[in-house]
Image (tube, rainbow, N blue to C red; front, side):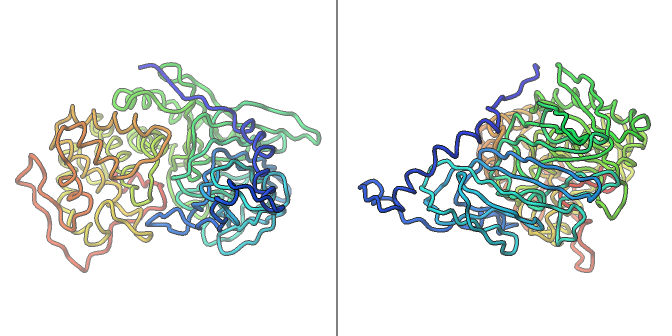
Length: 521
């Protein structure tokens, strides 16, 4: 297949046109205009401070949708602080008297809406903004927030990963708004441009492709990155450190770039060199890689207090602990595949609700395990085939449903339990056993193509599966995804489920998207 990508208009250019075209109608109405069209408009009200997520209902605001973010950040290596300006181009979904952005731990300096000073207040994790005049429904405007941030600030939850030479960010699932004000939910994906200014001895890198490098006064350098595809806030990567950027070519001309601590570049090279082969293997199964570039970011910290995970699938640049990647291939290969699969399931197609996480993690583990077993590598349970692993997982099915709920019905406390990972694999395995490998592959391709650069729900997957299989699979899949007991496994009538023991502990938990290779792969 040929490498392909979708080009969008530059985010900064889009942002630049909005302020001049937005507020004239509402300003006219506020000054006493009484046109018939204005009188027919619904009275402005505050936007609902939720996007209706079943796991994180406090995330987001439903009064608008974001088309583009432009972040202009500056890092001071002496103070280790960040000064930022976030400019959002948004379209209102209703007439708004007030709107809010998700924001936590940010020192807000000023807020402007359509170039005009707006009043604001910070309440819990919301930055509530009142424009100087109401915003009409279904119109474009810009919101510009100037702020400061301390990556080392103690918060209830944070995306910042401080390192000795800078920082990286780990926003999943609900912490991007500790880095920049945003509508912090995958439902509202947007274009992204990041300009980051750093001392010239360091390197600033972000999701997407490098489009500009500027040498500035004071021995500082500004790097500008742009994402060519929409990105969910939980997948944004911004990092500063003593890095070297290593470039190589992947399959079908795909540019690969790794962002590596200078001091560890040579030691990490064997792991980095695995990426072209991983991409080629996955493209044979899921089609062309969906973004403009891919690579790894082993950020300069192995501290368990800095981040308690192995890897995170931030878009186009997967975050890792460096020490993990220093292991031999059979210890890291399946996990590297897991994170790469997220470029398709989770990044290109993002969850419409956090309850749909199994679509991300189940698929990532599914292909990660296939990759492992094709190579004859033994997993953490001493098993060497997918069938043996699924038989073992099947036996645990009722216990996991008891401890962590059905696969597609998590809550915040158990969102990242094994049920969403290898429990999700079991659902996909059952579907493949039921419809056959060829139909299963067609389901996967159709789902990815249909919802590329968008979001999708469990119901969307069920609908695609039924369409491609030519039969109604809703009952079959809903029983597997939402049932309180484990259904019979197609093709394996001899498989049995171990009875539930209420004294057992719940499956091992993982922090947001950070997959522990030793636990499941």
